[in-house]
Image (tube, rainbow, N blue to C red):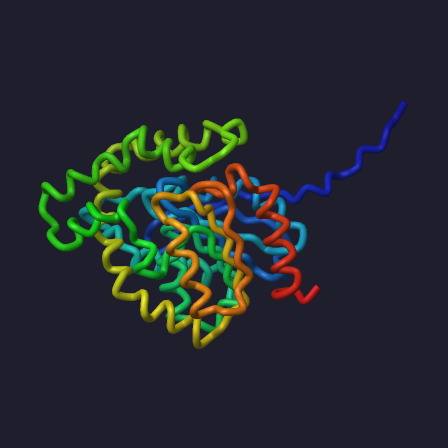
Amino acid sequence: MRTTVERSALPVTHFRTVEVNGIDIFYREAGPVDAPVILLLHGFPTSSRMFRDLIPALADRYHVIAPDYPGFGHSAVPDRSVFDYTFANFAGLIKELLDRLGVHRYALYSFDYGAPVGYRLALEGPDRVSALIVQNGNAYEEGLQGFWDPMKRYWAAGTDENRQALGFVVEAEAVTAQYTQGVRDRTRLDPDSWTHDLAQLGRPGNREIQLDLFHDYGTNVPLYPRFQAFFRRQQPPALVVWGQNDEVFPAEGARPYLRDLPDAEFHLLDTGHFVLEDQLDVVAPLIRDFLDRTVTGG
């Protein structure tokens, strides 16, 4: 007996690599090429893998692009002697990637490191940002609480002692804690997530790359007033979805967004740093509804 096999409606994710300014940049891409673009920017210590489940939840209606920065995920890991690991360079590479892909307008999902990378992009092309989704991504000094004290010492004095004092952040206990801290039901967490991150961090030379980035994060803080001015001036439609139990980016950094984006949709969730790991069933519908109303007008 012959049976008819129907094609699954689940969107297909493509895994691509393109050379940008001499560096291989890996990115995940899904959805109709002529649909509104959603740019997903990952944080530390992960990669575009953090969006593995969100991408198919959006890609039936949106063109989703999620790149890896150099030194993360499947992008190249150039030696520190030939590439400066800075947020300015990351933003420049992502801008060039978008230009190469013909992307001129996009909704920006900013998380962790993705916030300063994305907001630097926004300063260069404010009219390119169609909407803003903020998930535990800081743009206010109120969000730099106790966790950041050793970072601040390193920014103030870049001594080897202050640098080495941050080494614990890339160790297994701290990386695992970024996933588990503040999560009520840990059976929702896939341990492959932090296992994958630790494998990436364990690559030769990667520890020093991360310490370089910890130091360079200090260059983002003086830009906070410019980021905030962008919010006030442009007033992009905004959705703030924040894990309120996050010790790295606590809720004190979420509330100030409402000063500059008073019409933002605001949700504090009872979870930690990696909201998508245990709250995807809550967050994905929020994002879908927000994008459907603000980007496609549906």
